[in-house]
Image 1: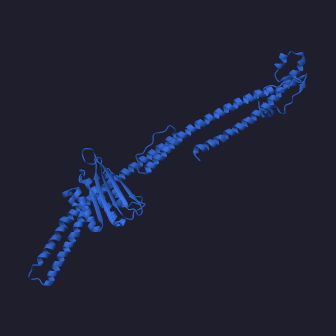
Image 2: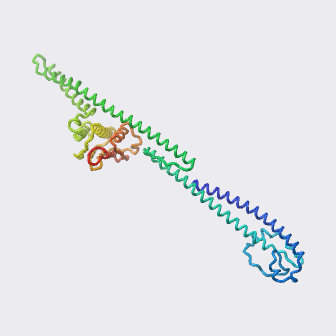
Length: 406
């Protein structure tokens, strides 16, 4: 039951009790007044001459007195039950040929009772109308508050409510706005820190990749070259030459995995050939390492992203593909990159087991994807059902005419 109905029922019960109490007091006072009026009229009848000695016009104009034996009926709108309630036990003495009759007094009391009941009904109706207006206004504020809280729970922390005229509702609204503002400030702080953390992580990866490439890579190349040169030394035995050959092969294997590690840490191909080539190289490398098929459909007209934006997009795709190989138990993945005048649309899909709890149980990888999407100014959606695979959609809006991120 709604609050308005509960309050209305409570007020209706109170009004009815007050009305019944007032009606009881009114009827008791009316019975007393009728009896007192009849006693006064009986004294008047003693001082009057008999009805037969008076003109008929005077007899008919007398209040509360009728000629004895007069059986003429008077039109009355007073209900019988009300007449019995008010004058049922009142005495009607016969005095000097006059019959005392309280009908006129009862009719006046009935008219007053109707007038008071009507005024009471109008007042009760106005009270219910005022209650409806005030409760309706309060409920509208509460409904707006509920919608705003739902928006906040969905992540829309910019939701605010207008000030209210009522002090209590305004205090509630002010507390909500203050809470939403604090949450928005905290979210901005967390997002800023996470963005800085991602940038620091990318810079550290780039630094490690360059150090490994410039130092360790050169040492491996030198060891491999020296091992190969030992194969042509006539002073070495066949066993020593075989060891040198094995050492060169080991170096080649290490360099192969080393290149994959460097590509994972920092995609040098993106700096040299651009984002499109980096995405192709990413899918090829992922297929080799995971053993799964990756179908790539990519628009050649990619936007002109900055270096930081390219890194965010590349890491987003890298995390999406790595999640497929780790958790999806899939046999195939599809990566589609399309562009129109308004946005860059990216979809990563797999035919794996799916997850009904996604993204509710999101880990650090999915959270980093969401933050990278936010850094790109885009919106990411995770669509997954148990047994139906997973789809990840990223939409990055583009500024008109420039081809960059808006």
